[in-house]
Length: 244
Ligand code: FPP
Image 1 (cartoon, helix red, strand yellow):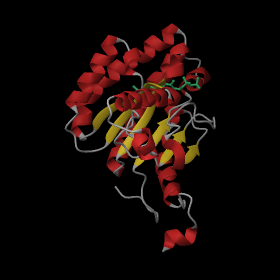
Image 2 (tube, rainbow, N blue to C red):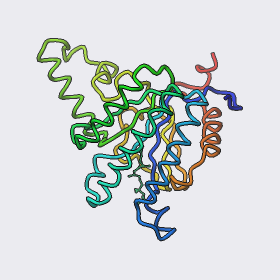
Image 3 (cartoon, protein in one colour):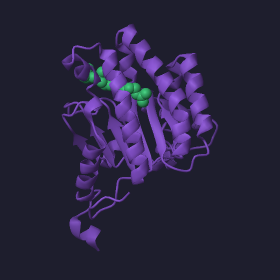
Image 4 (tube, rainbow, N blue to C red):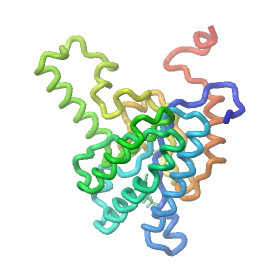
């Protein structure tokens, strides 16, 4: 599928899926019903991005701060995640989508980690889009993990502090090997990044929509992509330099 517009499509799209709870509340339903409805938006978004030729789609599915929610909701989210992983593998394989995950995965329950490992192994050879799930993820935690890995590498003599550059540092982040996000989109009406991809967001185009995640559609995402194609990304330079 191609989209009308002058510029390139984003290579990497990252989404903060917010508004499930409010969607449920508006319908006098338990919050969990909002998360269930959110899964349908996940499926539609994954399908649309893969068809459009997006290289990486990162979804903020569970933040490190989400552990502080009531146990009932945390458990329900973990069950939904397991069900999603189990059910989605054949579709991911059909659409040649490779599953990856970033975050403090050691904090996940063994059964969730096992399901995740299985789904990643089953799609490891898929050559198409990368579906990157941010699970138990927080950007500050990720940066600290990167510093720890770097420190260990320095102890082994593999890296010297004087030679450290931003590009070298990025190799120790959970997102090593992935391009930086071109678009970070947040649904649900809040205009903040909430500890999501703070390092990687340096030159991302930011989009905030009031649409609650379960109401989010491929048509709205298509509009966002078209808008993105008309933005001038200067990366600190001036327009004339880009034109030449
Ligand atoms: C934010 O809505 C959403 C989450 C904390 C979880 C997102 C999870 C899903 C969309 C479903 C599971 C995802 C996968 C990939 C299996 P909120 O609860 O903060 O909404 P609110 O701000 O309206 O309360």
